[in-house]
Image 1 (spheres, rainbow, N blue to C red):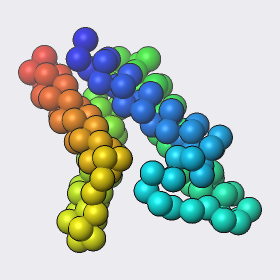
Image 2: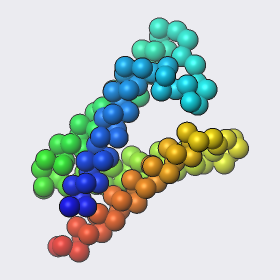
Image 3: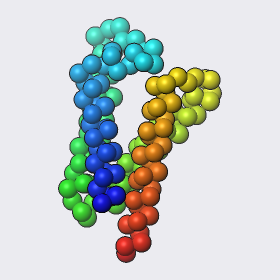
Length: 127
């Protein structure tokens, strides 16, 4: 149950954020004062942030549907969310930045990472 719930939440988060970056990148970046000012910038943001996050979300949904891939899906999710949380937290310390959006994102990313690790621990016990 925890494995499927964690994979589903992770996949939904990545897919949802990726689609939002594809559809409305300026609105998504406004809370962190990032302005997208040219057509080339919009294209790059949509391609990289939208495309990569959509791909990762779809990969996690694939892992969710295949019980033999649950472990790999949890590992991928923990790696993705964990690296984002570590780099976000590090950057917040380096830059002295914060605010509700950044703290909320860091909290969510950290909680998803911990949930993935906890679910992986449960899978290891089942062996």
